[in-house]
Length: 123
Image 1 (cartoon, rainbow, N blue to C red):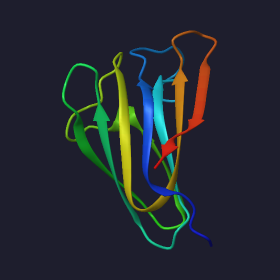
Image 2 (image 1 turned 90 degrees about the vertical axis):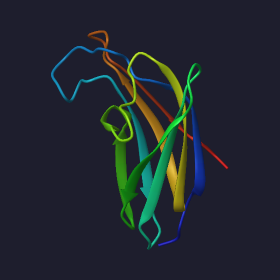
Image 3 (image 1 turned 60 degrees about the horizontal axis):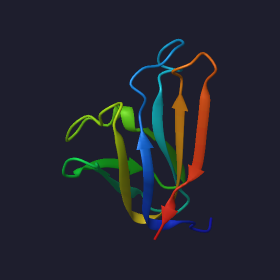
Image 4 (image 1 turned 180 degrees about the vertical axis):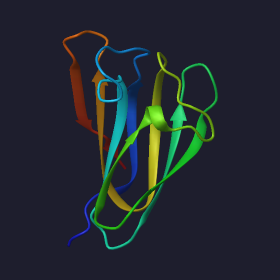
């Protein structure tokens, strides 16, 4: 399999709604980084979160096995500290091997859910 992607990615727009409607956990409002590793090597990924009013937090460490995908919910990132809800943020994602990153948000604050998805910016 050919290796696709880049080692550095940026998601400039992040926001986890502070509440949602519908059954948990499927309809919990969330942000996700969908990380695809097509290489033959395990990807060690670090995520750093940036805010408008305080210093960056991170790195959050994630492993994506070779030739696998991992969907990382920002809501589930706890170490070094939970990513706050109801707060604007951005992030930088850095990997030891090239990966592809897609950003997705489920906003379930209304009964009519909204899903946003976009490819992240790569460097």
